[in-house]
Length: 461
Ligand SMILES: Nc1nc2c(ncn2[C@@H]2O[C@H](COP(=O)(O)OP(=O)(O)OP(=O)(O)O)[C@@H](O)[C@H]2O)c(=O)[nH]1
Ligand SMILES: [Mg+2]
Picture 1: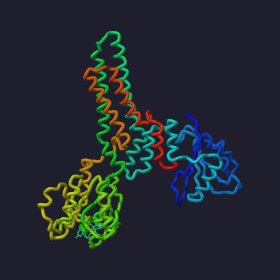
Picture 2: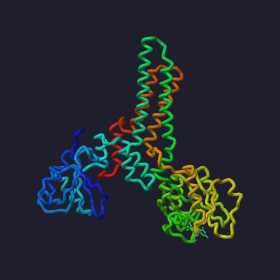
Picture 3: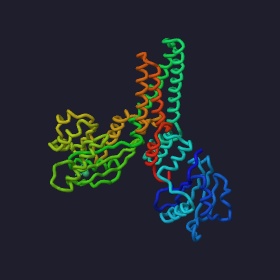
Picture 4: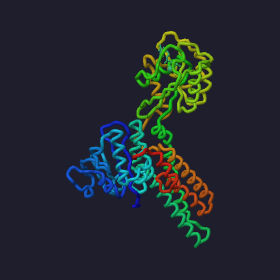
């Protein structure tokens, strides 16, 4: 195990709460804690047993004043989150108490940790690999049970296991190639057909398993990052009413005045475990109102970012030029058309205009009719209606990229072997494919890239 300095950070969110935790990790964690911790019964905490707790106070290193009443717990290396000696101080969860305790820990000799540095140490000390470290962050940011489940699976090493198996396949292919090359040197030009067959089989098997992993990567991204849905339409068609109906609360102001919503309103809903960001926008129309104009511009920007656009039309009125202009804007995107206000008796909307559109649903944002059909349609569009949580899903864009790189190299290798090219050449592509897989687990990644990944973590994790 490598040697590092001892680091510390506040591991809980800053604010007012029952308890806050200051985490210390490194060779000297206990020694540093012992300088500022006054146990209740003169216990020498440097002899503390691993996975036990002690009650006492944290005092000011200089004037010995008591700062806060705390509980200290100890996890001895290597059986801790980082693989190093870890001390956690539970103090009162106030901004001042927490920062004061942290100050003393720093004065006693620990260095303030960088974002993600605890997890980085767990990685560098080989407690976990990179895909597991990334999963830790996904667990923290998970917005639904499904994304949490997927992240848990990855943090337990499900992806790592698969990747390591694939690397083993490719290593075996390399060994076979080496054997075949040695063989040809003795007995020129004749390579055992059976050996070539085995090499092809090894690459083919890897190929199909990578393809299998990639097959649900788009869904994986949605499970992790969520789906971005934007509701658009001209003023007064009922966009804000739909947002409220989806949220089941009066989040946005609804009035019969066209141009009520002027800013972007973003909220999350949970669609069978998928985090869905629903954005309500200002009704799009030509307007001279300065504020509304900015709102309309923002609405147009949001259309660009959306995974799915919900176009809302007022079915009780004729479709006019304003509607048509919006229809043209979204036609080439993934969209659902809602014909709203179906609870009204008088349906004026012209059927022929709708003929060129797909995915049309009748709803009433007011009564809630049709909302379930809308939800079902969203699931059908992105998940073929089924959302599964049991299988391993690739949710991280970085992993997806590495898998594609690996697949690409495997494919070239297979083409070259089919074209009877030199085996030496083929081994170059196999090596590259292995290297790409290693980027996922962190076995093959440049240090600055590693640092970049961990720097995006939160402080104290
Ligand atoms: N009858 C009926 N009225 C509705 C329905 N949905 C919305 N309305 C009414 O239509 C009016 C406009 O609704 P909003 O939700 O504010 O419309 P909007 O599209 O957000 O309007 P802007 O923010 O101005 O762009 C309100 O008076 C709503 O009560 C519906 O399904 N049926
Ligand atoms: Mg509105």
